[in-house]
Image 1: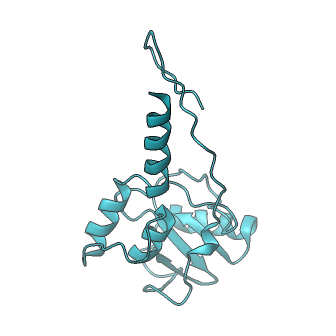
Image 2: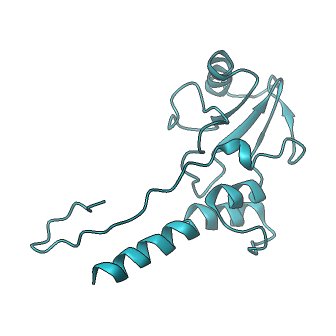
Image 3: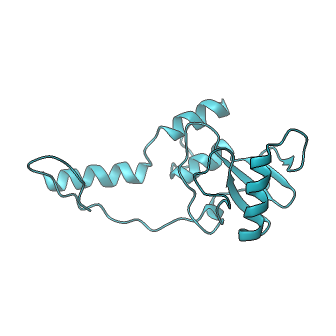
Length: 149
């Protein structure tokens, strides 16, 4: 893949394309703190995304909890997860219940090993993961840079 640059002498990097990993490979339906979807105070926009997601993906899928980065229907668990941001972004929908991804699921979604130590605080762990580069991507980028020089 060639990076777009304004440099007079751009470096062509040969970065391998990695296979996609479905979100279903790291979602644990026995984990986390579930809450009813139809609870008082739930945002109308969230409820609309969930209803639309059910029509598109069935009873189990991922939905963006804020914003519209995955459109209005969320994501099938057969697809890779979208961007993991510095704050909780992805909700797991399972029938009439929902929850945010756990820090362990965020870690797995980014490709960090199970023994990678995260802070105890869920909020801090998600913040750090959202600012991270996936380990395999960092490795591949460094190897491509070394090969190009």
